[in-house]
Length: 292
Image 1: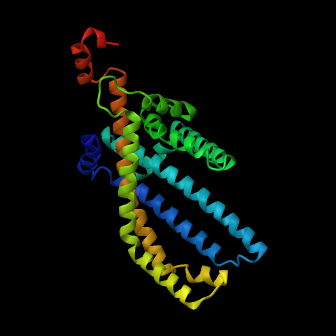
Image 2: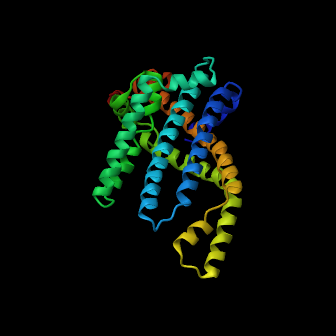
Image 3: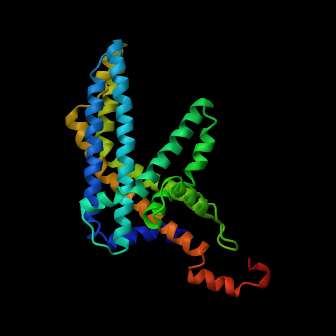
C-alpha cells in the first residue's frame, strides 16, 4: 500500500519537465475558476438580502457560481488525467493539445455520466432527508476510475462508469487484506489531507483577518444582517491573491490523484485480466485447489 501511494510522487517528479504543458493548461482553468468565483461572490455579497429582487439575483448568482465551479473543476480533472496519461505514454504534448484531447467524445460523455450520477444521488439525498447520503458515499467509492477508463480504453458514458465499478468491485483472491475499494478509501483520505494542508498554508492570513473581523463584529453588538455580511467579507486585495495561490497549490493533489488512479486502473487491468507477470506466476505456483 505504501509503495502504491508513493509511486505517483516519483513518477510526477521524474516527468516534471514533460508535465509543464499539462500544468499550464490546468493552471489557466484553475485561475479562471477562482477569478469567476471571486467576481460572482463579490457581486452577490454587495446586494441587500432584505430586498426580494436582490435576494433572487443573489440566488441566481449562487447557482451560477456552483454550476461554473463544478464544470470547470470537472474539465480540470479531465485535462490533468489526459496530460498525465500522455506523459506516461511518452507522447509529446502542448497545453492546447492536452485541452483538445480532454474534450474528445469518450471523456466528455464519461464526465456527463459522472455528473448525472452525482446529481441523481444528491437529489435522492435531499428527498430522503439525508438517508441517501449512504448510497452517495458508496457510489463515490466505485467511480474514480471513470476518467482513466475513458482515456485509456476509449469507453465513455455510462459504460465508463460501469467499467469503473466492475474493476473496483474485484478483489484478488489470496492477495493482501485490502481490496480495490479499500485502496480508494485510503486514497481519498490521503488526497484530502494533502489538499487541505496545501489549502491551509496560503489561507492563514485570510483566516486571521476573518477571525479579527468576527470578534470586532461581536464587540460592536450589531445585529444588522447587511452590516454583518459586509464586515465579514474580506477585501479583494486579500481574498483574490489568496484564492489564486490556493488554486496553484491545489493543482498538486489533483495531479497526484490522477496519477494514482491511472496506476490503480493499470494494476487492476493487469491483475484481473491476467496480463501481470507476477500474478500469472503466482497462479501457476498455487495449489490445484486454489486455482480458480
